[in-house]
Amino acid sequence: MIRRLSIAMYTLMLASLAASADTPSIEGIDALEARLRTLEASSLALQEQTAATLAALAQAREQIVALQAVVPSAAVASSASAFNPAISIVLNGGYAHHSLDSADYALAGFALAGEGGPGAQGLSLGESEISFAANIDEKFYGQVTLAIESEEGEDGVGVEEAYVETTALPDGLTARAGRFFSNIGYLNTHHAHTDAFSNRPLVYQALLGNQYADDGVQLRWIAPTDTYLELGGELMRGQSFPSGGAANAGTGVRTLFAHAGGDVGVEHSWLAGLSVVDASTQAGDDGFNGDNRLYLADLTWKWAPNGNTRDGGVTLRSEYLRDQRDGRYIDPEQGIDTVWEGSRRGAYLEGVWRINRQWDAGYRYDRLWADDDGPYASDVDPVRHNLMLTWRNSEFSLIRLQYSHDVPAPDLRDNAISLQYQTALGAHGAHKF
Image (cartoon, rainbow, N blue to C red; front, side, top):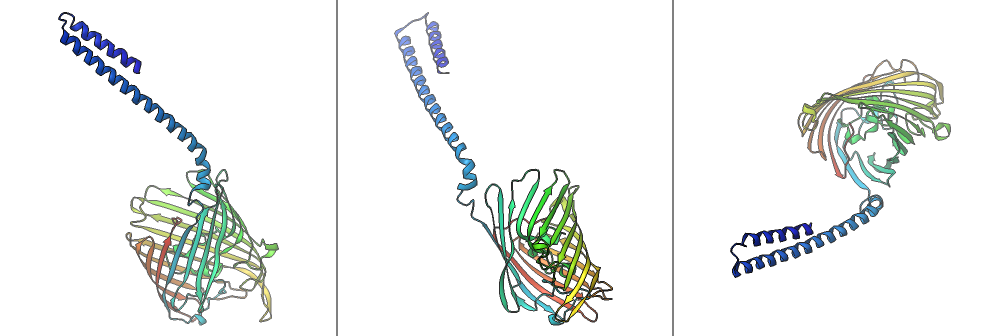
C-alpha cells in the first residue's frame, strides 16, 4: 500500500511539473520542491503508523493465542468464585389459630404419619431453609439444603436434600444420587416455600407424610422434542414414609414417572404427569408391613395475558393419588396383628388468580376417600376448604393470609386462620413450572 502511495505522489509531482512547463519560474520550482518535501514527510509518517499498527496486531494475536490456551481450564477451575457455593436462606414463620386442639385432631381412615398433622398453634418460626449449591466441576453439580424448624419448643436442624447431579451426560440424560425429593407427582418435587398455600393438601399429608424424600439414585431423560417430555425412575432406600424399614437391603422403593407439557398459543401452557411408587415396607410409621403401591396423576394449566405470568393470570392444578396395600397391620404395643388389604384415595383441586405483580388470591378443595375395611376403616371421608390472599413486596418476600375449614373426622371441625411471612435471602434460583 505504501509503494502505491509513493507512485501516486510522484505521478502527482510530474503532473504538476508538466502543468507548469509552459511558464517555468524559480518560484514555481521552489513551490514544487516544498510540496515534494511535504509529501515525503507524510509518506514517512504513514510508514511509521503502519509499522506500529502491524506490531500492535502481532501483539494482540499473541495474547489471543495465550488466552485460548488458558481459558478452558480457567473457566472450570480458576475463576475466583467458580467453586464458592451459592447460598440461599428462606425464612418462614407466622401466626395460626386453630379452633380444634391439635391433641384432639384425627384424620378418619388415615394415620398421622410423617409431618401429616395440623400446623402449630400460635406464633412459630415454621420451617426455614438454608441451601448451598454450586457446580462441582464441568461434569457435576451439588446441592445441600438444611431445614430448621421448631417442634414442641425444641429447635432442630435436619438434612432435607443433599445430592450430586450430572451435567454432561449425552442425549438428554441426567443422573442424581444422594437424598432428594422424589420426582413423583407435582408438588412433591417442590420445596414448601414455593407453594401457593401455607399448608400441603390433605392427600399429601395423609399418603406422603407431607412430602416424600429419601436416599437413593435417580435417572431422568428429556426427549429431543418440541413438546416437553420427561421419563425417569428412582431406586430409593425406603426409610421414609410412605415406606419404612429400608427393606430389600436398603433398596425398598422403586419409582417410575413421566411428565409432559407445552404451550397452546401464546397465553396458555400445561403440564401433566403420571407416577407410581412401588414399596416394600417393614414396620412403617402407620404400622403397615408388606407391599404397597401408590399411583399419582397430576395436571397443571396456566393462562396469562400475552404469556406474562408475573403481571397476571390464572393457574389451575389438580392431583389424584391412590394407595394400594397388601400386607399386615402390626401394632406391638397394642398386641395387634391383622390383615391389611385395600385401597385409599385422595385428591385436591386449586385455582390461583394472579391479580397483579403484588397480589394473589386462591381457593383449594381437599378430599380423601377412606377404606371401608382394614385398620383405619371409616365411613366418613375427610374434606377441607382453603382460601388465601397473598401480598408480595417483591419476588423475595411475601405475607399470606389463609383461612381453612377442615372436617377431618366425625364430630370434628377445625377452623384455622393463619398469617404467614416469608423472605428469601441470597442467591435464589427460578421456581419450577
